[in-house]
Image 1 (cartoon, rainbow, N blue to C red):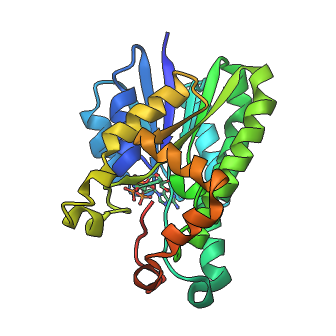
Image 2 (cartoon, protein in one colour):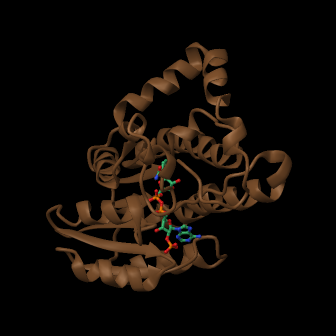
Length: 264
Ligand SMILES: NC(=O)c1ccc[n+]([C@@H]2O[C@H](COP(=O)([O-])OP(=O)(O)OC[C@H]3O[C@@H](n4cnc5c(N)ncnc54)[C@H](OP(=O)(O)O)[C@@H]3O)[C@@H](O)[C@H]2O)c1
């Protein structure tokens, strides 16, 4: 039987890698979502499974209804929703202010909640089904210059845990993926990759895609990428002052711009 997997942010990075990985699942049909249609078309043509696409800005008012209508009309079911699309604009709060928090929340949190709301009836009808929310290690610890981004990912994690508890009786699993540094277009990790002694900290979109598979099809609660990043979350609870001191170390360097793409 066909299994339908929808991936947002499929036009690059982790989303593209997730779509490529999921396309190898038996019976897979992909629904690809992002703004850059040409990228989605090229990806769809290169996949070993059938794929349809919706070019949409997920922050548009009508995006959730358009996507839900597309899935209903073309596929009639949904087995996995991967809420992966996201963005980051770095900037300290005193400079970048509420405006930066608002635009980041709009993409990384509000758009996820709105799309999930539109697709939940179909996910319930297709149960056992799953949702994977791609959060971040930055949703467990906050660095200077990334407050807006961290706020959006903390919110996503909190909401996901609650949704998991509510939806399990309906057969809809909710899993989380927490990437650390993954070299992608939006999160190039250029400085870390440039130094031999920090290069090891940067992982690949393919590893994040494997974690999405585990959290969705494998129905795991959450996966860090790479796994040892989970220790940072544990330390944040056990030794908050220590973690704050360590993360504040790069404050002077990292709070300089409000619009440069961020690091995850
Ligand atoms: N890479 C990291 O280090 C890292 C670490 C932790 C978490 N993450 C999270 O992983 C997810 C994927 O990021 P990535 O590293 O793969 O970055 P990326 O290569 O920049 O990909 C971001 C994707 O999101 C889509 N997108 C952004 N804004 C959108 C909007 N308004 N409407 C529709 N699609 C939108 C982009 O497509 P279009 O531009 O075509 O719309 C693109 O496909 C994000 O949620 C990010 O926060 C990444």
